[in-house]
Image (cartoon, rainbow, N blue to C red):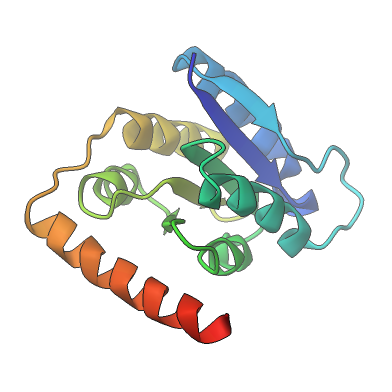
Length: 153
């Protein structure tokens, strides 16, 4: 069974808990990286935990939820091999996989309802990367990633 990671801050915790059942229903084992309470936490801690595992290839996909989704998408996209897509419709969720091969889906828990969030997760999971011209574009992003990771070493 494929594994999918999920994590949130306090603002996304309730939605995260709802989405776990959706993801299981789509045939995944879910690893919840937290948070588990509504106490205020720092979203980077949870975005980093998930993005590190995806970046290292420990798992292929993950879902992040915070209040707006913006913070989680920023932190996740700092990691090599992570293509985190902040989505707000089922169409953008589907296209994020088909055109961008997004491996992390980011949702604003205070921006959309649970029903729409569930539909977005389903659309993203069921979509398939189209390759072709889209792969050529992703290759350009990978080149930038490689160039800047060399600068840091």
